Length: 364
Image (cartoon, rainbow, N blue to C red; front, side):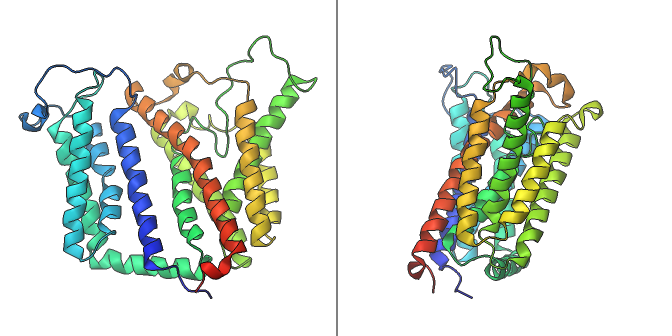
């Protein structure tokens, strides 16, 4: 089997993981990026507020948890071990204090020194895990697993990272599994359907969008898997993991009466068709899978653009357990990541196709 990509390539993947975490942190800290104004209060005054100046258990937990993967990825960038922990904490501190400082100019946000402490605690947990002997041993085993099952091209590393990004887009149960549309709230009037039967057009559009989205996601992974026999297992694991994640998100966020609001017959039809296509196309060679994944990705985005129905968040807000503010921020983040995912996936597929055409430059 071809040699594993050089350490520099793996470092780039970790760097991109850290950058994605930083983007998510800044997005959640500054959303909705409007209403900027200066209150006139001394800058950085929030750092010296008496503790706890502003405390909400949910916010404190979120501020801690979101920095754990950030600290983990930062600590993996550098050696020796303890030096990497110190650098990770320094970068996390600059990120946290910078985000809280910017919140001073947003009337809807509250800059808090307790948030900074929670952020640093999360970063410390993540960085400590990254340098611990047990995790480093597990990380070595993970690299060995990657070497055995995936192609040696660096595009496979980026694809695995992008796959994790796609799973994050499934955290909102208001978005259907493998769907690219919002809940239908009624046809806009007047509406001219490309087909004589508007309901048939909507059925084909929604089911086709779900099928193409499933094909795009599954082939995006399988085109980087070496053994044909393992591609079917990968498809099964992707579908099962996505289903369980969607069930978990629905269980946490939705009220019991709305547990299966994200399931409808159109999507079930699309899932069945998509599964059959994934199973057949995964038997093809890597180049064919890559091209089919690109086509499916384009069709899925086209279905989202052509979908004529609107989703009014206020209409189904009563179905959720969480307060509106937290839901609004989470929904905005998922929408942002959903827009970022197709671009990231397309770039990975293009890089993988290029490396297939010029393998001598990337294989040892």
